[in-house]
Image (tube, rainbow, N blue to C red; front, side):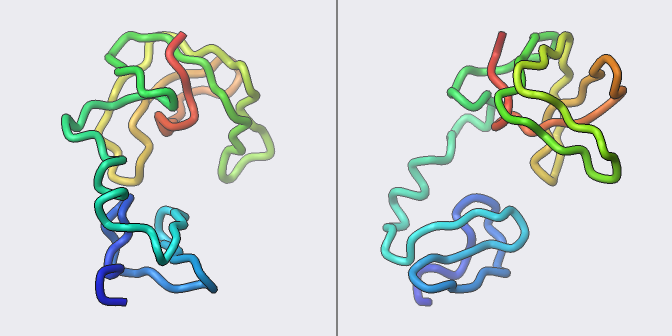
Length: 119
């Protein structure tokens, strides 16, 4: 565990080995124990701008489309694939939820940018 002391995605120290994979229980990121540290650092966007699942930069007021069905914690409803969300607001969510928006039929919700694409 000499060079795998932190999660490459969220930098958490609480990681564990599961077979040939390392797992972070905080962000659910899994990576190979043989993956080089340089490859993990290349995945991080150096400009700290919020980007959608395809790498397109997002800004306040954009419209996005959900690309994966998202279950809502504490509710039996879900945000369906293809749901269009208008007038998003970018926030600094420490838990990865970096888009604040309102969805018709659901209300105010925070989304992760990795599950949307710019419309």
